[in-house]
Length: 167
Image (cartoon, rainbow, N blue to C red):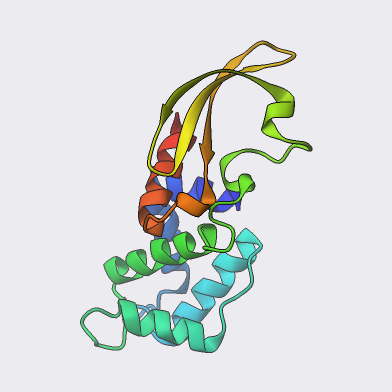
């Protein structure tokens, strides 16, 4: 999951997509067909350690992103599919609001490691706290999300996670 987030937040994501696109690009045509897309998805998912989408799932993606309906994907169409597919896996609703998306995995609870100094603010689905590491005394902002109140679209939560990971 971390590698997915790194790819999604990488400023050179178009270059990464180009590498996968060109690796399967038929020399004669200059656009990806469905069979080519299956090869791209297989290579990408194997590289990221993810399960390869079923033929049906790949077919649905292909039809959805073949914007002009010509049976092939231009690079722009492929790029939209590429980013959307990564987002869908990285921010799967079943794990989107899980702890591992926000922090590296550590045993215990965040408040076992940090002392809550003060509450910085509260929003519609959570709060932000100033925390001080109990051993190093380093200060961090800790965002607490109340899962039951998070009724935002996945894209909005994803944007906030990306911003927080860049800070």
